[in-house]
Length: 232
Image 1 (cartoon, helix red, strand yellow):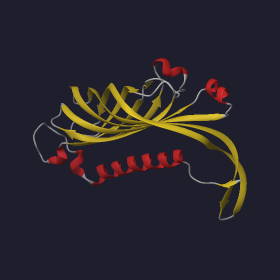
Image 2: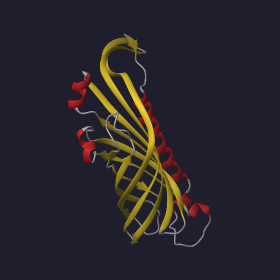
Image 3: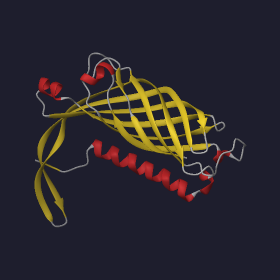
């Protein structure tokens, strides 16, 4: 028996949501970030852009046999040269479960993948209407893959009113790798007001991580994160 503690997965969730909340707070607290950029130089804040969102993450190609669909979180920021062209630095955290076919081979009841990526992505807004817009983006950077296998373990939960026992899925072993990653995607945006930079976006990316064939999910893992979020 062991005492209950926060897992790496739970900590990553909290960090990502806290980061998104902080970015939203910056927008609310600083009206300069909400000014409509017209293409003229009104200072550095008129060129800065931030984004945050989440969505679902299916696997692509041969990777689909070894990776179940999951969910992901994306945070990013960058600099727009003008209303058409810019550069974004984006962080993605994706969680996907391991299929039962693989779990049965290793005789484990549960398991999951964590894919972490940090990429530099040029962005081009090919359509910039008053409300609707469209863009393409793509680039590359660094990725980390973590494969974890879990088992239900008896734990003790202690609160101010006392303690009780229960089961939670705990990691019994894991392995990881670091590798380059490339991505390419497109998206659409919807602006509530032509005088406010804040807009909603829907984005789909093809992501290829240069993983090795000797470890699951196999050679050159491919996923397609579909993200819904806010950009300002």
